[in-house]
Amino acid sequence: MAMKITEDCTNCAACEPECPREAISEGDEIFVIDAVKCTECVDDGGPQCVEVCPVDCIVKA
Image (cartoon, rainbow, N blue to C red; front, side):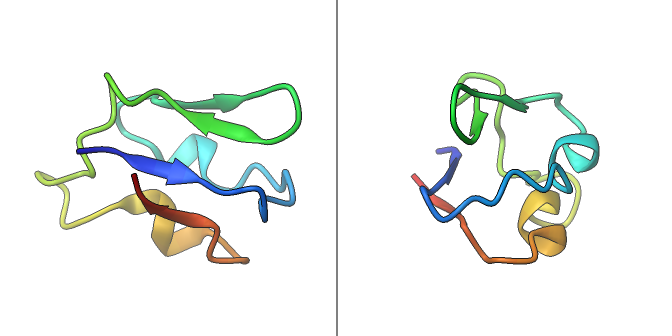
């Protein structure tokens, strides 16, 4: 399973450097998560991106 960034994303970029798998990148309008690379940080105590998102726009896909 992977995480997904919703349209509520404000493009703050807080999530991108927190991803240990480099699965987050800037999309056309909002940041996006590569589902192939995303592991929901199961080995890192849970989704790191969710912890730093100020608008809670990252959800399970």
